Length: 159
Length: 426
Image 1: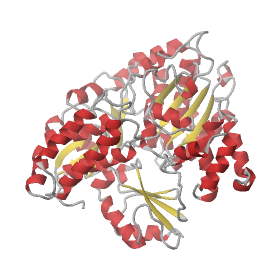
Image 2: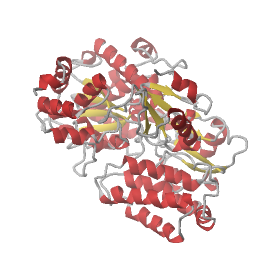
Image 3: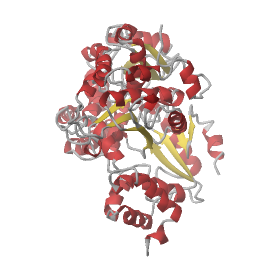
Image 4: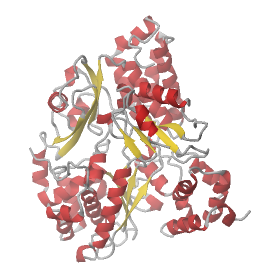
């Protein structure tokens, strides 16, 4: 299979546009993974091989980077990704109870996706909004001051 | 009380446009800097006493002055803003990034002039989406107005600035790990020396400064070093963004003179404890600082005084422990965080943090033994400064070592009662 069969022309030209600005092609590795994930929600083995070819790196080298970063997904995720903060201020303010509500309502544990592919539940380090703890991000939206009461309606907003 | 860092930030959540920023004196610091030599700019920042606001507290001017200068220095140098705010309990840079990115860009420009950098990056954490939008738009405006690119403000100074949004991992905030991330690699910290100021991004001299640090720089150029020093209560220079989270009446963020007493922040600005909760302790500067208790409440929150009290100013954002929250549980939560976020490169951190977490877990479950406390103490020595490439593990040990001393009786109770006496956090 050739590169063109794996990544789209648009993805390839976006990746080339990035490495043009760096002294070496490999510097575009993380940006490349971001470009791929933006289109496909996650990064497959095939996509890793496609990126490796463009950046003249080994697939293993790309994968070592991809698996290092917590927001590059090497497994499929649902249509909506929930990132619940479980760092210290949110913990003091009861994020464990919020997590229990979400897990019960969606019938998933951390790292899992609902059977209808609607939600994936993950944790994220301190979201930097500790004066409004507990907090979470769904996709790119920040939700703060979470309670056992408001968490359900928030989840429902996401199809 | 002067609040030069934040007074122009709007309450409605929108950021200052270039026009609005210029109307309140924006980019005057840059114009002033361009009339001075790079060495004079560095000297002004040194004289002002500005210290890093990201946690380590290193003097900013001293850092800049170690960059190679003159005709024999490398032609390409880099200047980077560290906007990877992820320290547990810290939420200060977010305000500056969302509210006034031009202030940061101006600080970067002045710093870049001082070290004669050609390229610049803002390294932003993924989760700050609103900040990303604001920064991208302000960079566009700055290019359009001639503050970025070639011949800045009509001078012979050229600087290009790009925004890099990261893809997670707390360790990216460590400056050498950040450089590896920018190079597209795994963000393992680098061994020092060589320091980034000599051998940084792509092997070139590089400065990495925290957002709040850089936002102070334009103020120092326009106001002067003497004015800046007088802003502080205890002579260390400037104001500080202080915050408080936990069970206080009014959690929030305030710009106050550097050296404001811990008690004033806690009781006046944060409104004291919520009804029904009593103060038990506080991490004064984020998750990787030592606990302080009642006896330290009159400590001025500056670098020297907080160190003398046995902790660190860190990020200046208080995490308040109340009497209804288990101190062992709180420390366990912190160590779980650090264990998860360790890059795994050095043995003490990779092995020691999960071990520590397991021991704290057994205490919380009621299966801990007295000798576990000795092992925990051993860990705090094993992961002390000097045994690892970076400050992650030593930082992780700060809340633990202080909790073991200050809350010894609470640790003991977990062992004697075979359960967590609070049992409020599963």
